[in-house]
Amino acid sequence: MNRKGLSEKDVLSILDKARSKDTSYDKVLSAMCTTPHPVAVKAHMRFIQSNLGDFGLFQGTKELEEKVISLMGGLLGDPHACGYITTGGTESNIQALRTARNLSGKRRPNMIVPSSAHFSFDKVADLLDIEVRKADLDAEFKVDIGSVESLMDDNTAAIVGIAGSTEFGQIDPIDELAELANSHDIFLHVDAAFGGFVVPFLDTKYDFDFSVRGVSSITSDPHKMGLSTIPAGGLLFREEACLLPLEIDTPYLTIRKQHSLTGTRSGAAVAAAYAVITHLGKEGYKKIVDRCMKMTHRLVNEVQEFGITPLIDPVMNIVALDVPDLDDVRKRLRSRGWFTSITRSPRAMRLVIMPHLTEIALTHFISDLKDCLRD
Ligand code: 0PR
Image 1 (tube, rainbow, N blue to C red):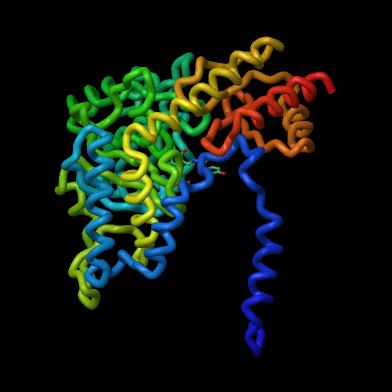
Image 2 (cartoon, helix red, strand yellow; image 1 turned 180 degrees about the vertical axis):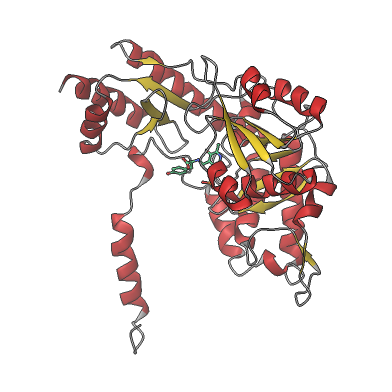
C-alpha cells in the first residue's frame, strides 16, 4: 500500500483508465446481465451504507426487502411466499438445495437436475455433499421426465426444473416434475434465475411457478432481466418452514437469527430491486420483454434467409443457432467487436438478446454474421 494517500483526482483517473478497458454492453450478445435501469442506480446510491447482515440497524431497508419478496412472490404465483434477496442465482440455488437436503434428513442425499442445469449446481453438489444426477433432455432441450424418474431413488432429496435454461432459454415441464415430486414427497426447486422476469410476461403462458402445487422454491434474479443492480438474486419459498433449516443464531447482532448465506449483505441492491420493480410495474416489464422477443424473432427470421437455423424456435430471448465452422465464425465476429457464446451439446452459437441491444446493433450483427460465414 502507498504510504501517502493519492489525491481524489489521481484515484479517479486510475479508475477511469481501468473502466475504459471494460466492455460496454453495445456489442455483447453473451451476457445475462444488462445496464441497470436508472431508477435502480439512484436507489442503489441512496442505500450504499445499508447492511442487511445486521438488519436491526436497517429496519427501513428490511421492510423494503419484505416488500420485494412479496412483489416477486405475487409475480410468481404466491404473494405470501417468503425468502430473501441473495447475491444472485448461485447463492439462491445453494440455499434452496441446502434447505431441501436438511429437510429430507437423508444421509447420502442426491438431487436430479436437467443436464441443461447451470454450473452453479456443480458448486451445490461440492459444497453440500449432495450427489448430482443429470437427467437427459428431449429433442427440444426440455428435461425428459422418464429420465428424471429413472434416476430417482430413496436417497433423492430434491428435483430441479429450469424455467429459462442458460443455454437454450427452454422451460422444463414443471407441472410434470411437480407430479413426480408430489407423489414421492420430494422437494422441487425451480431455477428461474433468468426466466423469473421473462416468463410471466411472454404471450404464451407457462405453468412454472408457485401456482403449480409441488413447487417448493424458486430462484429469480432482479440483476438479470429484472434490470436491477448487481448483486441482486431472489430466493423464494412457498412455506416459512423452509427458512428454518437455514436459521443460524447470531447472538451479538441487533437481530437474533439470520437465514442468509453471506453475513454482511447489500441493502443497496434491495433498494434498487424495489425501485425498479415498482417503477416498471407489470406493464413496464411486459414492454421490455416484448421488445426483446420482437428482436429475437427478427434475428431468427433474418438469419434463416441465409441458411442459418435455430436449434429450437426461441421460447424466450435466448437463441442457439446452428452455425457451420462455429469457432472460426465466432473468432471473425469477435474481431468485429461482437461477444457471442456457445451451447455445450450440441455445440451451437448462443445469443442472448438483452435490453441493452438496439435494433441498429442487431442489423449490424446480422450483416456481420452473414459476412463472417463467407470470409
Ligand atoms: N441459474 C441460471 C439458469 C443461470 O443462467 C445463472 C447465470 C445462474 C443460475 C447463476 O446466477 P449468478 O451468476 O447470478 O450466480 N447465468 C449466466 C452464466 O453464468 C450469468 C451471466 C451473466 C453470464 C452475465 C455472463 C454474463 O456476462 O452463464
